[in-house]
Amino acid sequence: MLNNEMVSQYLPRFSEYHGHLVEQKLSCNTRIAYEHQVSQFLRWLESSGIDLPIDPIARDLAVAEYKTFQNSSQLLVPNFISTT
Image 1: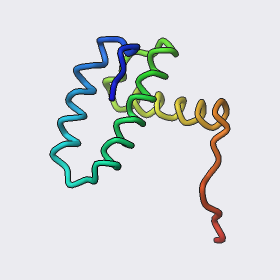
Image 2 (image 1 turned 180 degrees about the vertical axis):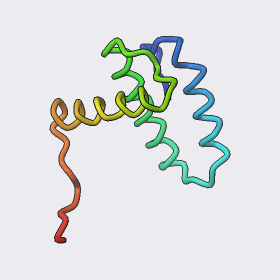
Image 3 (image 1 turned 135 degrees about the vertical axis):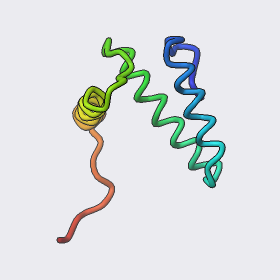
């Protein structure tokens, strides 16, 4: 699922992730969706100039920034309404 545009530094980690997904009891469509989401995140990391986060704090910050990017740039909205 990782395309040729992706920097080679991410390929080993993505391959590890793919190997892990294959071992899980997931439908093919779920596996494809997860791989797509991760590849989108890696593309964003690359375009943002952020190195692949190794430590948990840097990872969490990168994920928070990515969520902000998704919500503002791609105009994503929740697909449900909370009635609570």
